[in-house]
Image (cartoon, rainbow, N blue to C red; front, side):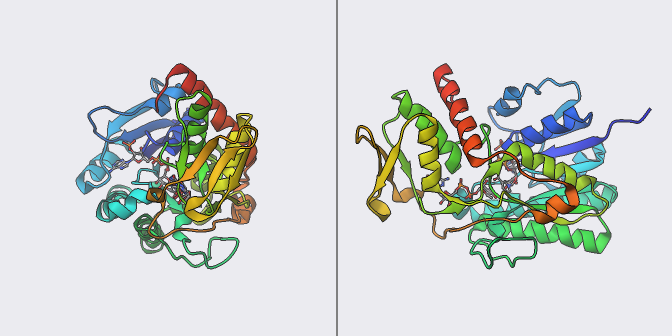
Length: 347
Ligand code: NDP
Ligand code: GDR
């Protein structure tokens, strides 16, 4: 009988980690997922997906910043595939904590690559790279060989991890693939990220738990896809014949303002914007009530103004393509947050 494949996922408590664990369990994998030691562990995502007690899921503590732990982790779980999804992933925080971000998001990947090189170079490795590496974009749309120009400590740390993955591939023949993923969202997205902040706030405004939604730069444009589809792309990258770098994106870009309008619309409220810059406000077009205002505290020292990716290579070589539209995604997120707010759920 064929034995089940074994996968190690770092960052199983995060959005992508939870969806990927679910996907791999459905495919019959034995999954080890890592979480960080903290006073109260946050398993709400794997609980929402109903996989926290799955017999083929093993949860272990692991901190990305510790090289010796990486070696012990790889030695004890003997994975066929490693998905490195753990990171300090919030761009805004990376400006406040550049050194911690470099250590977790940058060096963390190298600790795993080193452990693989030392213990078993046949292990396949996926690195969660990002469209933030394109930063101040040098071409539209962005593809695998568009020059990088990161605009945040997070983007720089991810670029280091990306190049180290390529370097271990070229130097030691390790099957290291890097997925340059554009923003992907879902009802499991953290509330610090703009889409979920918006959908959660819309749900709270509807239930009179919040007065006004405060945001930063409404002009930023993002290529937003659905996270569940993107983790399938990660898995496909590790099933390919050779390791490589792939962009996953929808090839559609919208402003943060557009997403706000879409989210209120999903809750049956039409919004009109007026004014400019820090004075811009959004109002209910029926009652005139103030719903959105700008708070400069959400501006970043340097901004990534426009992202739009072309995932043709992933389509051609992996058979991957996004299916969910931004309107469907936004509706799904608003409905989930409406339900949670009704139940008093606070994640
Ligand atoms: P999340 O922020 O939801 O999850 C990050 C995970 O990393 C969490 O499980 C977190 O644990 C864990 N983590 C953070 N610091 C450490 C540490 N020092 N040691 C161990 N674990 C740690 O991110 P996403 O799921 O959205 O993203 C997954 C990966 O993909 C990240 O690397 C992100 O940078 C990258 N990415 C994401 C994109 C997106 O749009 N979502 C796009 C492109 C790349 P805890 O729960 O304890 O905080
Ligand atoms: P991003 O996502 O920085 O693209 O990184 P985020 O949702 O934080 O910001 C998107 C854009 O919205 C603007 N913005 C605000 N952002 C937040 N968080 N809060 C606000 O109030 C707000 N107002 C405006 C931001 O300035 C930005 O332009 C995400 C993360 O998941 C990364 O880990 C990942 O690598 C990239 O996506 C691709």
